Image (cartoon, rainbow over all chains, first blue to last red; front, side):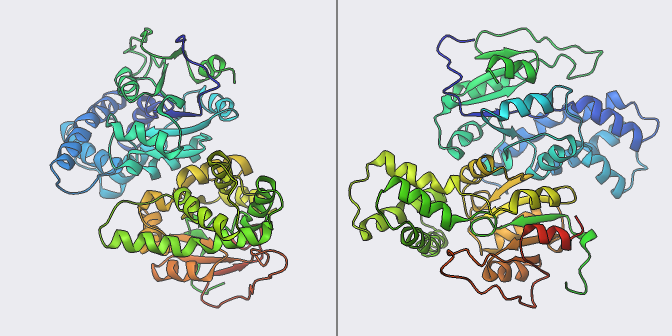
Length: 241
Length: 241
């Protein structure tokens, strides 16, 4: 724990969602295999997720050039899905089944520690999402998985995707607190680094199996983070909840 | 109940908040008397609330003229408060106490039926706010009063106040449903009429004591509304929750 950090000063914990709170790899792999019989669910999930960062980058470049409006993640996911289906040589899926598959992101399973860990943190702090997912996606996911958010915040509210500073600073503005009174909790060091640049506290959550059991991720601590926790329950322990 | 309405088609119930879910009159009157000893809390609450519609109208006119940005209700409330304090001849309140008083809107008490009624509706529908209050205000209010929203939607998300159509249609867009699959529940016929124009279903909630026990409000049914309910529990009854 960083020397100058006092948990009593903290007011809000904003959570990255995909990978940090929910297990997109298992969820998408299972839904792909259910909806597209015979497909390699693991490879399908990894390919779909791999299209995510480039798609957001392309929207942000378009917005910076003053062209068109903000695009919801549901639409980006559908565009990436079309490409993945082509790459996998799958051409028999009708529009209704594509839509059902695209909504698999609304039904992702929570990591086993998430619901109880969030409930503990909620007693002492405001807990919200800060995700590039759209509000509808995050709300349906929360309802389905029982995630007890006080509030669903999203790129859709700020009309910018992480790591744009408007998202991190936007959380502090929404709750009328200083950036140092907000912690971003995430399983991704690049997200945390961007939040730190904006003055937020950062809590790294280990998710070694984010990309599946055969591709364990390096989850070594980095000194720049305010806290490092095995899971969300461990974060609650560290914060005295 | 309107003949063409099927509760199974409905997906989302969006609630007006001030007056419909929480009792602003009692809450503000009590907090004013606590923070400004000797003040007539009832008159103070009514005066403060009376400034609300004109203040929003003025912001919407400014935005329509392309001048400046969206203003949060917390800021509008503070501006109105300054005027009410002058009108009541109160000049001894320092900035910290004004801020504390302004945050009374974050601590309003729920009507007695609200928490249980919302919990029942939540089992079958997505339940969200659709209020001109800002996200931080509505989130802190929900946390304080135990309101179990799936999602906090606000004028702040749509950058327009009710009765602007962008707010009602925005709810349908967020959840990717038809306007007829959204119901606005409110204790105010003008709010419901504007929602109806956008194709939403409407549920009137009786709140005869909204302006205090000495100023009972006419809560007669109007045929244009899809449903008419004594309180939120009665709305859950009508919807089979």
